[in-house]
Image 1 (spheres, one colour):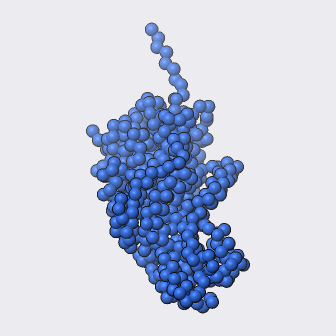
Image 2 (cartoon, rainbow over the protein chains, first blue to last red):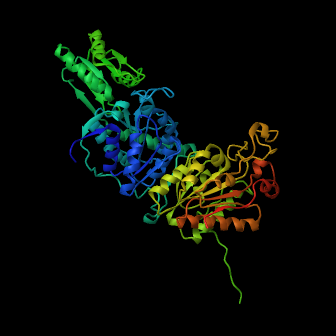
Image 3 (cartoon, rainbow over the protein chains, first blue to last red):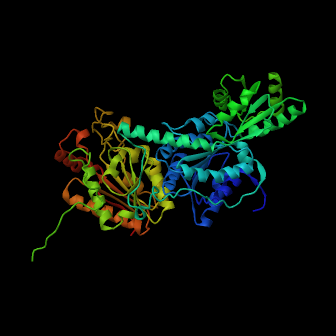
Length: 349
Length: 248
């Protein structure tokens, strides 16, 4: 397919279709409504199904049911809707069911606003639902990357039998860019027949997908098995570096904020400031090892986010005492400007 | 010539297991009926159950099919996702009154209204069993529970909710019937209803719902025989048995 100009939400939707997703369960919420709208027209035409759920609570459980059959499945929502889905995400993780969930983040807490924000970092990477579980969290910074990560998300979900979240700030949903969306064939994905429901006639034993273990030793084993899986997921860590070879000052930012920081870095470089950036593409697993390495030669680390300091805590944990860590954030639907980031960095020189 | 009839355990019943249910509980009877229906329709290999919360949470230890476990109230949404992706399979949910009529009210109403092609077995015993006898949406007026120790007061908690009546106001569902397992003659009728509900699903007629008036001797503080007498004498008058909606 040639490059076409598309809105982020529609690009994500078509990317999912081209990755083989034929079923979508969702509930309207701004700013991601174009995805369910797109899917409601697209999926019935290719023999799939779109179901408008009665709530996000129901939508995520429909996703759980669809994922339980080993089918590529997706839902999308925005911050308050993701809160309602968090119960389901815990059950999906506990039952080890593959699913892809897109969060087009808006400002919070509560209803907050409908403009872009990054305030759901904690919710995505630290839980949201109850119990010891992890989501794989992917944070695109361009629409092409949103397309590529959406397609990758289905493969990761099936490979690890785990929910995968695309954490996109509102800009990623609402802006337009040229993207190329190709058909994506999943390769090297383990066969789902041994566990996927509805295949009892193809295997010797039945399959029971459960998260209830009343025997504490069995529940502890279940938790330790999940922990081993999360440890294995660490190899999926992805990040991008910009001008880090000789960087004395290191900016850490994700999503749209990283694009703004990139412009600030170009301007500061023109002034002779040796500044670079690490942009985590996976927020879980987090590139803590690479951030630790880069911080060893950094005079100062600056974390920039569209929130009041969330990824900041992971950067601080990775940097430890190797360099001072500062923060600059805007929130409520306001993004940091190039000039603000430059000024903040100049203060650190 | 004498006919020899062999009464044996259904094939869909897990081998060599006994349930954890209290003596005299209606769950065991209903599980047995479910197994007999699965056997008679020869659908064991293609049936997927949604295990609920509450006393029947571990029904997968007794009824031998594929399962997915649902959060409280969410079974109809989970079943929607399963059936939409595998319309060739037989999907059932099995929910109690707290699960279905309280925390899961939105999910059951909307799944029924969309006409999702799965079957719900709704166990109404007018109380929360597993959590220890709290008031349910179906607890009767004056009935005592641990959260209404003086009996349910309609001024405070409203009147018990009748789910068959409520769901039958919807245009879409194919089949809605209320039965009981409180006496052998009713048990036979209950089996017929469960079988019909599964048949409707298999024939693609739409959503099918069977409410089973059951009992809870432990939390009602009654002997099993006395509890089933209470089901018939106190529950049935408020929750009349019968077909509330039929596709035909």
